[in-house]
Length: 357
Ligand SMILES: [Mg+2]
Image 1 (cartoon, rainbow, N blue to C red):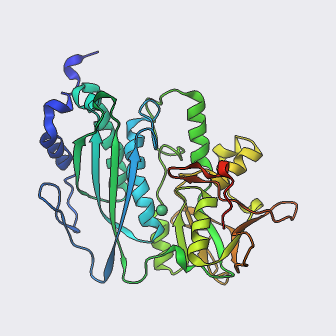
Image 2: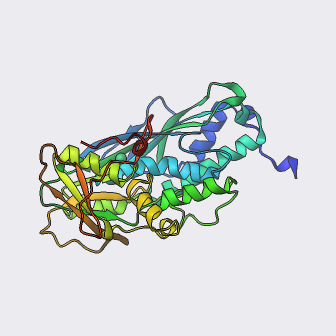
Image 3: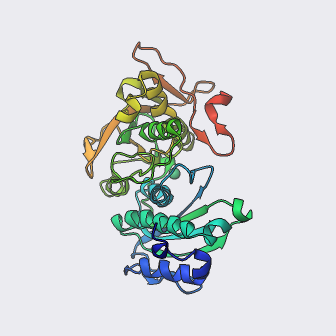
């Protein structure tokens, strides 16, 4: 190994040096940024006639990724993708991102730690460049716990949408058709394959075909739904179809029925066998596809911005005591669909058999 080619540890670079490097790497100009990294606050200039939307998401080592399993580029990509997907779900356009990052002492003291963080930013920047999202600020700190500390990243995304037009979860109505973008269950299937192998993926030559490592936030689809007035309500699938559909139903005051045979299941999930594939599609989280409702009278395109759109069910009138969600099974029965996606801080909801009422 050519030691002289290894970068200096981050500790030698210092916090100001790291911020300066980030500022240089993300210096591409944006008309929306009056003042970016380097002052006490950033100054943003939203387009006239638009409202500002804000979302924030944690990416925590041990909860959302493992340093011994995930390539650093994927961690950076997923950190930004989580925020961008929320912006997409509102039909909004990203304006700027802010990143707060805490790093363990061990990473600051070693050359390998600096290499990890550079690869993290390389994955982050590739996705930011693809969607022309400037990084306009953030914070850095050493995480507590000394050498046993973990990487903690918090992403803030600022988006804009024409005043009063952002898509919400609450706009769904009785009789609306339900649609999803892309395919479901791929992220859960790729993650379960990674966990089975228990081996770190050192390098991923392409981001395509890796729904867990490199999910694609559906920004173009979200903007298209808003601009063409194609959706009444929308949510992104971060916690799994069954859990996120329950959120949309509760917010809209309706019930939903999913048609099992209509679900677009990702090829990676299909490899698991029919039963596990269905479980992954219904309950596997982090697909970051969009789930939206639209009046049944709208002739929905089969694809938007190059992404397939599939009708998977409909919204129904809520009956007191009745299930929030049902599934039309291939045998014609209508079993209750119980929310079984990931609920933060409580583990997989399906283990608790909590009824989604
Ligand atoms: Mg969301």
